[in-house]
Length: 264
Image 1 (cartoon, rainbow, N blue to C red):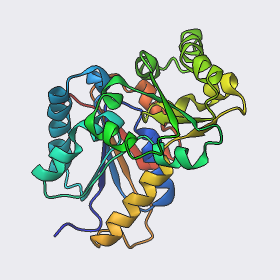
Image 2: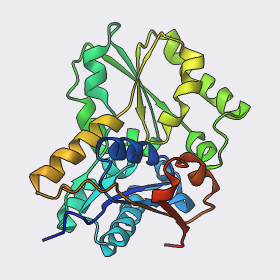
Image 3: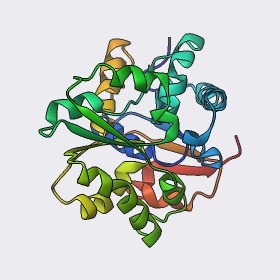
C-alpha cells in the first residue's frame, strides 16, 4: 500500500507537460509531485511507436523508483501510443492525455474542428479510434505542428519563426471555417497568446489540462491515495537537457521547487 504522502509522478517528452503540472497543482496544491522532462529525446511525435514505448517504460521506471503513487503521462503522443502497454505492465494508476475532440464536437457551430498535434499523436490507433466516435457530420481538420515543440524547448516561444509556423498551420484552418481548435500536444498551451493573435475570436481554443487535473483527483480518491494534510506540496523536477527554459516556465513558488539536470 502506497502512502498518501508519496508524490504524483508526471512525465513528458520535454517541458510541455508543465502545462498539465500547473493545472494539477492548482487543483491539488497539497500534493507532492515529481516531474520528469525527457527533453533530450523531444519531440516524441517524430519517433516510432516502439521508441515511444521504450521511452515511456524508462520514464515510468524512473518515477516508480521515487515511490510515485500515480503517474500522469503528460504527453499526447506517449498516451496514444504507450499507455495501454504501461497499464498492463505496471501496478500503478496511470492518467493519460488525449486531444479533446469530444468537447470540441459539442461546441462547434460550423461542424468544422481543427486539431493541431504531432505526427505521432495523429497517426496513432487510439486517436483514430477516438475520432471515429465523433458525429459524421463534423469535419475534423488535422494539422501536424512540425517544429513547434523544438522551438518551445529552445525557449523561442515569441520568435518570428514561431509566428511564421503558426500562421502557416492556422490560416488554412481559418479559411476552411474551423471554429474550434483542439491543442493536441501539452507543449501547445504555451502558444495560446500567439495563436490568439492569428485567429482572434474566430476559434475557441481547447486543451485538456483542467480535465486531466480533475481526473487525477478522481483517481486518487478512488484508490484512497489523496493527500489529507494541509501542508503545501513540494515539487521535484528532473530534466536531461539544459534546465534554463524549464526554470523559466515554473519560476513561481520557487521555495517549494527543486530542479535537477540529470541524465536518465
